Amino acid sequence: MDQLSLVIVLFAALITPLIMAKFKISALPTAVIEIIVGILLGKSALNVVSATSSLNTLSDIGVIVLLFLSGMEIDFSLFQRQPHRTKQAQPATSPLKLASFSYLSIVILSLLIAIVFKVTGLFSDLWLAAILFATVSLGVVIATLKERELFSKPFGQTVLLIAVLGEVVPMLALTIYAAAFGSSSHSLWLICLLFLAAVILFKRFRRFFSFFERINKSTTQLDIRLAFFLIVTLVAIAESVGAESIFGAFLAGIVLKLLQPHEDTRDKLDSFGYGLLIPIFFIMSGATLNIPQLVQDPKTLILIPLFFIAYLAAKVLVYAILKRRFSTANAFAGTALNTATITLVLAVLKVAKSMHAVTSQQSGAFTLAAIITCILAPLLFNHYFQPEKETLKPTIVHFIGTNLATIPVAQQLAKGNYDIKMYTDKEKNYHAYNSQVNVALLPSLETQDVVAQDVFATDILVLGHFDAMKNYRLALAAKKMGVTRVIARFEDRNILNNAEDELIDAGVEVYSTPEANISILRSLIEVPSTLRMLQSTESGIYEVTVRNLRYTGTEIRNLPFVSEITISQIYRHGHFIKPSGDTAIELNDRLIFTGSKEHAPLIRQALGRLNTI
Image (tube, rainbow, N blue to C red):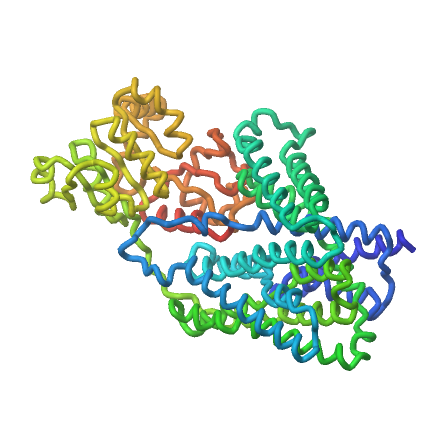
């Protein structure tokens, strides 16, 4: 019977996505469909799958891997201070502040609703109820936003941040709850050792992926070995200090995310998790439910709709907060999407049942109510969401240093989709060039004066000053302030030799006029058409970083716009590669291509559109 149940579950995991594709079921998350399949196969219907020891073990490992991958879903860049457009942005309605206030409202309402359940005697464990009502299914939110390509939009960032908080905060609260009310004799402060271990592991492997390419082989798969080492280590420490294993796994996912693994590492982990273990967990979560028995109990029958209403009611204030910045329809859509909750609910209930803090009937009621939210939330979102009219915002470029090397470049860029502003501390240069381009006079190039004039509030900062030491100092200050791209000029090779590694590590792009001239001359010799390309008014050379998952994994010959461009090189993992027609595009590839000036901007926008975390 053990082997038969395992075969049936694995076969169900195989055919479920095939059936979804056949009948074009895309509105519901795969996880919800897998739970429904489990309900049909388990005690509630056919009863052909039972909770055997093998399936229970695989299910336990599945939830650990699921929480590990959930930790890797978090995009920490959303929490960073954004220095850009400080004068244009509305601080009170930034995505981070909107999400923070929204989730604070969820926490408050969850506690109030849990108090009502306790006072009325419907559910006595106040803290467990509050944790469950405050959860948000990050996976459902990510899948829905990804389908609409909303991650790069303020609306998508706000909704995503609420979901991130809806997974991180309840996970931390569950750990404290289990340590405080569980049977473990460990002190609560020992949980700090888990965080300490995570920090130590992060620092120890901080540069792992910088030399990973040089030593990795297909027979070693060092990145995957590192991932499982992190999981097992932090899970073991979590259990040793009285925390829950799933929190250790979640923390392991965060550590690996901060190590910035290559995209193919994530793909391999997804393949292992979602290809085997995680479907088993979801199917078994449904198989162990006994719905006929649940509905026979009048109290449980009442709890299902009440828990469902509680999941929704805990998020109602999010609507009012989102409406401060977004339209009424989109505020409602964002609120509806954040009512979806399933992943963490199943994990929390698994812990609660092991602590005997919840009965099987109550656990079933929580689960069924959560399944209903995951069915309705994406449907409501897709029905009410209305794409906002977008204007192609120009790229802001600030130059420090006005001279014969920078002025012509600024003048040419100003004719395109660029918002150009130049800065100088030399009054003579200011009077010479302010009639030709937008130039501002700075009192000095000291960092405090540059910051005071919002020079770092830009997408690209070009440091074209002749003084290499000033460029060096300002380049590091700009990267520290969060400027995305900093291009610095260094004519003195002696200074650059001493500072180049530090600048590159900080993410500064370094150039020098002599080296640029050498490169152009070499290109003219090796590729005679280079000069015609550079001087052409109809075509040009472009570069774009691939952010759009729609094109990752696609061979170059199959790109829909391949006839409009010629991809000459791909910069991947620190190396240039010469592409061919069967070269597959990977996430974060930097494509160097030639194309017409009419089509290239649209192609760059399509490839660079962010629809992943």
